[in-house]
Image (cartoon, rainbow, N blue to C red; front, side, top):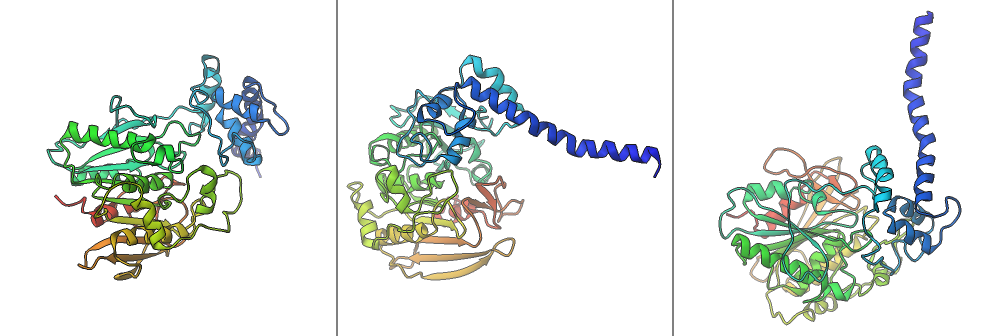
Length: 427
């Protein structure tokens, strides 16, 4: 082998291996610098106070790593403790340089500022806002009067700008001419809508009231058809969708629940575990003992949430069979809750198996009322984890953009199917 070829091989190996090795060598130094800035230990188990100090200085990167190994600490996700709003502030001026340099390398880290999609407009004044939510909207050009409104609720660790274009809702808003409302959670340490807290999941309170106020603002400002307001969401957003349908049923013409939880399954964060929700970031299994009630018991929880006498809005329910965050059993409990409310019974009027991508089978059931009108549908997607299913592409049957882990190309776009089932696509 010639000396030139030998030298070329050495240079290629250096380019392949030296740069990653340098990054791995520098990473602990960066981590130490951040830990030192937060005045917290670099080695050993941290105290609850150390976790709080890291949060107070905007260093969620450190606290998130600790919580992977020490989930029992009170300030870690999975405990009933929620950091107060004044702790979860932006990093102070002294941290800006470190934070900015690190975010150049890894912009998706929790300490990095969230970039708001320029297609969204933030609305500041929409009411008393007892849930301390942010309000974002998307309004297609030439919307016109008396058009529908869709409320889209993101999941934990997500934001409004991560739940609009990716899930296909903006594409559908342009196509079917409806306005889009995207509330954003700001208080919970993982940005989870607080569906499990009575102060935020009862009519006239907290986050539920904030979302209701946003709907009123959109309806008044855009001359929305108040008879065509819909709500859909993923995970905690799916659970909050059930909250909104239960507490304000007269407001909505229908809903779509993706990997969600039945209404009033939990009344505090500790009770979320037997609802099939894995709260901790650490590896582990869900609770083996799940809450399992009769359809009427589930339905009564919704009936007691307001003075509404019906009819309740139709619902489209989605889940992945490989979901390891919210148990797929919750789809059955949701089906029982809403079929009881809507008087369809729990025997499907229609069952079919659709073909997704990557050999996925999609199990579809429709539950109809005595007049034969579909009121509840369920989709169970084989081998899909905790995510919104989409089907990227340019055909009329496609929408969405895959952004893992929470938006997955499954060969079917749930947002489009929900729009079709609820009649959002009708002109």
